[in-house]
Amino acid sequence: ADSLRALAAGINLRIGTAVTPFELDNPAYAQITGDQFDSVTPGNEMKWETVERVQGVYDWSAADRLVTFAQQHGQLVRGHTLVWHNQLPGWLTSGVADGSIDNDELRALLRKHVIDEVTHFKGKIWQWDVANEFFANSWDAHPLPSGINGDNFWVSHLGEGILADVFRWAHEADPKALLVYNDYNIGGEDGTNAKADAVYAWAKSLLAQGVPIDVIGNQGHLDTQYGFSGPRLTAALSRYASLGVKVAITEADVRTFVDNATEQVPTSNLALFAQPYEYVQMLRSCLEVKECISFTVWGFGDANSWVPGWFTGEGYACIYDVNLNPKPAFTDLQHEL
Ligand code: XIL
Image 1 (cartoon, rainbow, N blue to C red):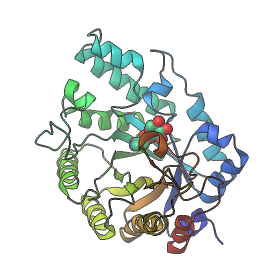
Image 2 (image 1 turned 180 degrees about the horizontal axis):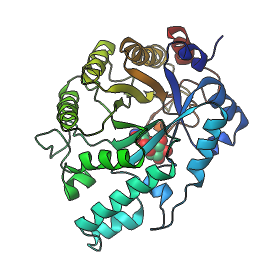
Image 3 (image 1 turned 45 degrees about the vertical axis):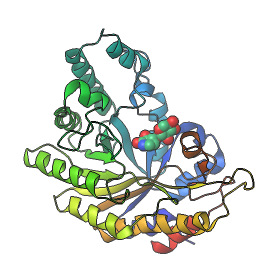
Image 4 (image 1 turned 135 degrees about the horizontal axis):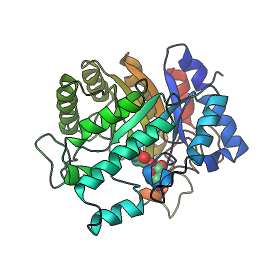
């Protein structure tokens, strides 16, 4: 049967995966990465803690390796991610904590980081995840009236206006890259539309001020336990698109619980039925909204996924199993394309 990338090429959609260099050291993993996907997102290699572990010393080597792999395999690169509250260098967070970096200097350091990184990769990045995960969830204590999380590291130090600045800086450094605001639960996945409403209103207001936002990226980290509505996601994506931006699914995976006492892999109906169903629903939403330019999974092999390390008792969130055999989620996506 045809590869995902071949099937999607005919409808002008890019099918992507997150990838890290150590995965490419496994020839079987590298083979599938090249065969099935025509877009890649570095899992960690472009994050600030990776590219500037020591202040003032850039190390682009791991990210450059992925960009070279992508070029050799006819793939476009989604840069990930310039401004986030996680995976910041220790020198930065400790400097802020002990007061040796004040807010003026923090702003200058952020500007330099954004401009230097975008400049290094200029012309090689299709979409940049400029800002990642700034909006409050229902459980966050201090949402601002805009719905932005007031406790976010960047917002608490520099104010929510920093978001407009980082998009402008990125645009200045690479005017051709598509600039993405990326977040999770912004497609109504939590069963309410509160976060989606806030992102929509914010994007509308910044676009009206001329801030260069090109894409709204919906991460798509789902869980078979919670249920999920495809039509609700479609509605959220088309509402963003009505603002004149593109949309994308940027980090899809569907995690399941394993009964550690009895199961090696999930055997419940939820895992076996809901997982492929939810993958297909996400892809279908993307297919239904013509402004949806890419559908990216956050890694494709169950042995490599970030999920077991982050969600206790959960795993098996991917479209290939631990032995890199395609799962029902893979074949169902294939059929949907
Ligand atoms: C994850 C990586 O996959 C892990 O290897 C790392 O330990 C933590 O970050 N949302 C994002 C991604 O935007 O950057 C995260 O990636 C997963 C959640």
